[in-house]
Length: 264
Image (cartoon, rainbow, N blue to C red):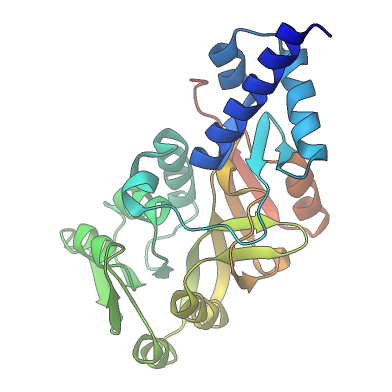
């Protein structure tokens, strides 16, 4: 390989790493457009970087390889993969029946679920998310029970022993579980210790668990383990989700619903 080609190769791979460190997830289609090279070239780049232990290839792209991922800022998550989150939320609402008692987790996808839920009659919702409670409180046919606890700034969620004790007094038909990270080996993981503890309590009070996760959560391992994959009854995700994890969930008899969004 000529020196100029070698320099170009190294520069491209460095830029790929800069992109994945910023976004945690990159798509092959985006890299092809960014660098103006063939799909085979990008695949070789990702294969090389994977062998170096820097990333993990998934269907259609790659995710940052890190044992304990850091939680992105709420402002960034709010706009990232919005189309996927909105489509996932709309599909998940189809699983809800009038009269259900729901627990709704915090997070941006769960918030889209709350927006899509508006119009469902005689639903009772328990949540530790202040934004979700605000969204749903405008619907006269939805009864909202806000859990108490310490407020987490930025996220505007509550958690801690107060919320956990309150939750012990309720039974849920369905729990809408937000997901920070999902892998075969570590199951469902998330970032905040107290919020993870509350999720475990809500899981224990639910008859059915519906997980929401766009493709960028696949292959990510956050600090705290929430539950194994088998605890979810249904996972609603998008068409770009990691096929190997989807296959494992199918083998566990977990229902996986994949929604399609327009390729951008």
